[in-house]
Image 1 (cartoon, helix red, strand yellow):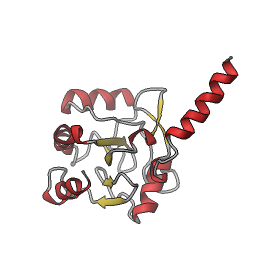
Image 2: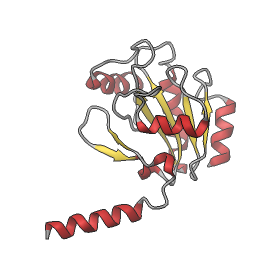
Image 3: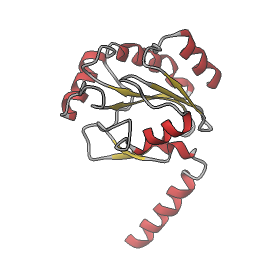
Image 4: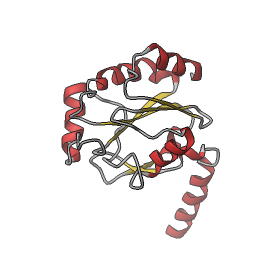
Length: 175
């Protein structure tokens, strides 16, 4: 019976994710957890993927990211946060501190994933795919990748604020 269940789960899982854009087909561990998610879970949403850090000059962007998420989440929009220590170790090494900081200081409710590298050979598989698809690697914390429902990726520099007209218009076009 157990083998049948596993077999059915594998078949169903492949069916559920069969129309998933390749850029999303990555299993990523959730922040401060042993659980993982396949990003295909978000395949029908417009996604803003952001590499974040808790001790950076751009950390204030968490507030406008959360506001952007609150404003658009009912329209199949999601923000995915990826803490990283790639840029001058500006993220806590303890994931529980990252999780606590994001929720208490900024009220973050969008998904946050495990602290990982987002650039170079050690980058997590998702950020490798984003870099390849967009042709742009993150230059600093709070680099943003906007992903359409069909998997097209547009890159936005750290200095493009989450509440900027440029990013807002790009998101509106995809929603």
